[in-house]
Image 1 (cartoon, helix red, strand yellow):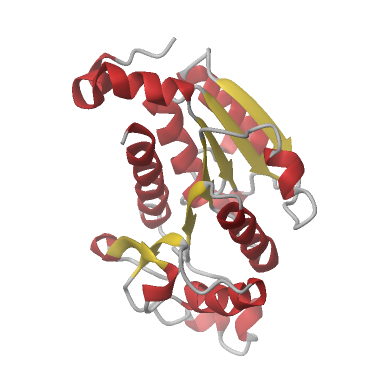
Image 2 (cartoon, rainbow, N blue to C red):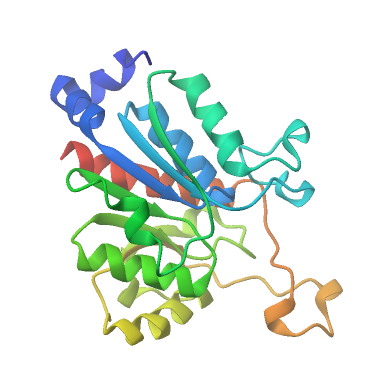
Length: 237
């Protein structure tokens, strides 16, 4: 069992009880989701749902907390599950190794009718919009991560409604996509107000949608920890 003595000093016995009864689902276990999942596990949450379809790649090592040389080629869900169990062996983990689509979101979350919270850290635009729409429709408390790539300023990371975001290309794309669901506001997101840095000259001549997105060790982690902090505060309120 995780030692919650230091956490209890801040949130109290009541807060510890609320955390232990809560379920948190993390969709996407990359640079943002990996840090978010770890922070949630260390908070003393009782149940976690982890969702990802991908494997650890060498290019993940610069920013993803679950990615190690020994893990390359392994499923991120397996690696994350092992890491979270090493933090809290009594943590109830439900693992889904799959690509999120509009058709499988309900099957992932159908057994959680109460006290469920969600962190969206997936990259696929269509799946991301479908997940947001599902969560809003079902009145599930959640936060969605916007783009952490091509940025360096840790002080520019903030939380707001998606309708109020600026300087975030992904948020702009998501606002347009969400119109298909008749959603214009009411989606809480973590994003950066920093103007994205220009693409590396090595990307010149490549179509915009095919260009690699630059990343740094700390920014995705800040996004993930900020998202986890938002959810933890919601649980203990």
